[in-house]
Length: 556
Image (cartoon, rainbow, N blue to C red; front, side):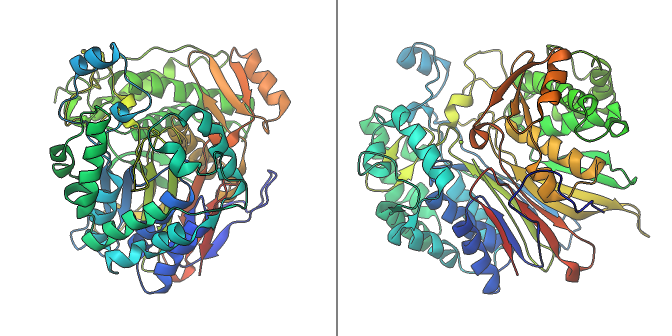
């Protein structure tokens, strides 16, 4: 299976248990674990942990976040075990190119109300609970209510990020009153209470989420939007619906010849970038080079750049991807052609390709949970840029995302802004299955629920950690702890300072422009991983939590 050694400096060991929760904050992990201990399932645990995360890591998500999730349901009677949830927000009906031309001189605001789409995470929690949960929805939010009302000691990494964002957001309505009541960010270990959020969570719990979209909380959101001259209306909130979607996938063969399949949520998310990069990497036979070698790193970096070149040109809300489809972008022949454009000795500034010629016409938090029945959940939610828009609705503690900034104002682009449309999204949960042969033919069995946070680092983190585990046999915590790279624009590649100097110099020799960034939390993502040890449920799971954040994998 794995080489259980860890060649990288770390303070963490992998966790082995039959019931597991892994998040980027220990108190949220405990909130999820408490649901499993009460007899709840992995979905109950995921919703409880997600709600708690809005309180204990407000620098990355809040009650006004968006979310995506994948659920492996071992009890599915129709044989469709893997389910995808898109709980990303839609644009207010009044938004279009002319709206931003009139109000903002043809620029998409990065902050403020006109960067806010309808928040989706609360609707996502209720949808997950109704379809798969076993405990009452109100019980799932109780730990978050308690954390908000009584407060908690702010951990060091969260405190540092909090302080960095205050100068940028201090002029946004409601922000300082909520997140800097003493005129500054909380210090490490200092208790932070969030009474307004506790009341909002209680209202959400009591109403099964209705208050947020069609009740008292919705009224307060719209009143504040109207007072700030924004376009959000009661109808925008009331009409919002999550979407259950079929995940998209790409196969990959590991070092022992076992067939795995990586599953991602389809566009409007960027999970397709991870699938494309993995497909290109498979064409390049990276396994012939040692782990962490310059040859392997160079090929993976180039594969990722190729995937992004296409994704940024073609990916949008799937309903608007009419000329270039998901099937075009994932076609094996197309990815093979893209792989052949890589120079193994030199970095290249790639442009987008022409998909379809080979086919007949036709800031973020991540958490994962698993229980001993075999149910596994991969969930991600985000305010986007740290605290998001910076807008906090008075008296509610609801901080709102700024996903509207991800739209385009280019009328010819599939991601052009329009009312009711979902913008291009960076947050992506991942899920890995393994192909087994049986009397009825090949079938998929669950292998790992996982994710890596951090803007466009997310598909890059999926690629890097999966190749380490599947191609090189590194155990999840080692794959988590290894130094990471992140492609930028053109020939730019950011490298963690933990990457050995000779490796950085070798990348420079091949034409990469290296930028070493010290802040790993902001720039190189943070992951959580739960790997199923065997098909025997008694063997349980091995889990890892990234040391780049304050998190923890817990279990029993």
